[in-house]
Amino acid sequence: MLNILQVILWFIDLHIGLVTLVVGFFVIYLYVHQKNDTKRSSASLILQEIRYAEKQIQNAKKNNYNFYLADKLLPTSSWHSNINLFIKDLKESEIDLVSEFYCHAAYLDVVIEKISNKKNDIIIPVQSGIGSDGIPVKPNLIQFELNSNQILKDVAEKINFIYNTPAVDRLCIISERKYWLIF
Image (cartoon, rainbow, N blue to C red; front, side, top):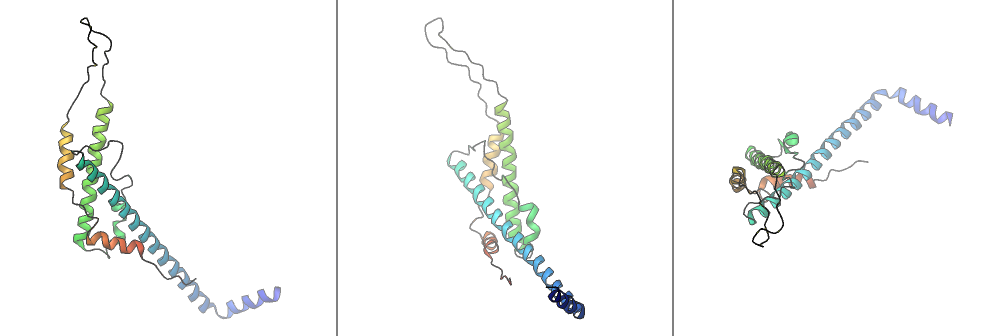
């Protein structure tokens, strides 16, 4: 066992340049592989976010732009933190298209949150029982219509669905790209 270790150390000592070169290439390979994995997983996440947001907006449009207040359109908005990964793969117009979609969807999230907070703050007085004339008294419900509902409708109407565009097709290709593994 000791002889094998001595032979290995002697070989490394004799060929230090070659060993350094092999180790350098291996480190570069790991770096590139990790970068490509990050890019692929980021593309998959962005695709999922776009699909989910478009589905939520389409459902709201079918229901007269009534958004379900408990759902965020972009729960993990990751486009802006990962846009740098796709600069070389997407054209400027495609980047702008995806960025515009994310900006509008993020704004809708803000408005939805404000509506939800406002509705949570409403106090609904309750009166129940039988009135003096023997007719049941209905509770006095406070109803309101916020300007934010109109904002939701206006912004939602302006959102262009992008899932079936060349920009998203490119992200799809990136997310499915397979890289050859040496080891």
